[in-house]
Length: 48
Length: 240
Image (cartoon, rainbow over all chains, first blue to last red; front, top):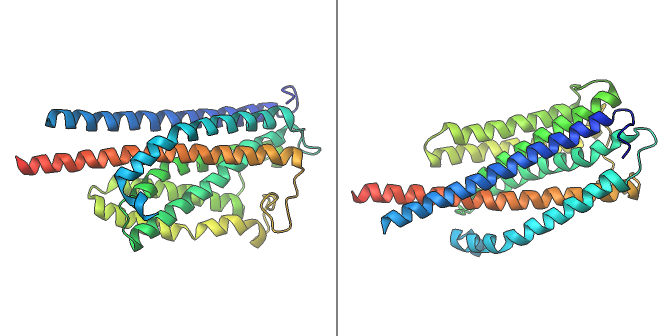
């Protein structure tokens, strides 16, 4: 990849955008999973 | 297949499979990105801009694949009433929406230097935009309707009716005269792309697929936990 080539900034923007949205999606899914399982565990704990 | 419809068995399988799926995903992304940014040569006409294709095309493939998964799961929910089918369809939607948005946005970033326009209302772009609206509408149904059984029924219908758009997206470049290029990878008479550019594309397509699998299994796991918690809360309020 020649970063000095014509339109290289468009390539960089496409990869940066993909990285940002995929990273955001991964963080969202992980945090939702952790929160849901924690709440369920807490509820089952208080039930005992 | 029937045995995995049991949420407990499904969770056990998912928990065992997820670490391996994540490792495979990371390896595929590493190989694919090396191929896309280092190994693949610039195109003789597009120059370095061709590298946008390595993130644009897999995102577009997955946007269509995820919607197909949603439609299949919705059909299974209607026909067989599998307890996990609605969970599978509901949790796939936000992931598919992100892939669809990325396909539109990276396509726009390719279109400006190549076509001289960020956006044109040609058949492929418009049908892809309709797919994005279908994702947003599907997610909105689950958010807006409080009663889960009613939300599930309406969501199933939207997923199945919206599936009509998938073959329209695929064949739009054949049926209409579009600015978007015709199919060049998945063709009956073989790919028209040179292997040096095709292999990173295929590896990244596989990487995006494994990423979807990992995120989908995790989303299904959290949705099952949320539903279980809601049922326990209802049962407790009934006891009180």
